[in-house]
Length: 247
Image (cartoon, rainbow, N blue to C red):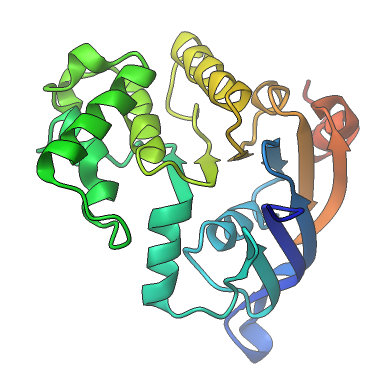
């Protein structure tokens, strides 16, 4: 077992060149232990989405290193990054990203179909998808299409899809952003249950009330970490300053 599941050193990400260069990340160093529940916060343009994309192996840093589960992934090519994503990372997006023509079960099965390291039969894929749906309380909705499900149910299908490959880490990008208060609370309760079962969760959010669910909050501004503290209360003053004193 590695000391840290995630460890970045001096991560830099620059978009563009010369006078139009945008320094999205400026020397980010962060370590995440197995089983942690972390929130990443920051105002628009702070670099939190860029950092999430790199942690999710959707993008590569301009410089610096990223160790994921003991493997340096910062210089891997697109095909190898895709393999890492499929095996080790479960994604939960604000917009759910479900395919409308597929049932809940078939949406959940998708990561299994692209897992080149674990060949499963159609029956095995179906059984694992159903088990994942049952784990989020949607076993009876397996044959429903996304347009037949509420927003909260669609997000739970997305969480089941994130879990089906038994990933090392769950990356949640604004997981409650499109949900009403009650559905958002249900999704956060589910993430807590997964964390209690040992899941490692890194969540991007702009809402202090959501960040309060995490054990630790990392706050970014202008591509740099300005605070890394246990509990959201440690970043409340910074958050309020960036949001005009809002509570």
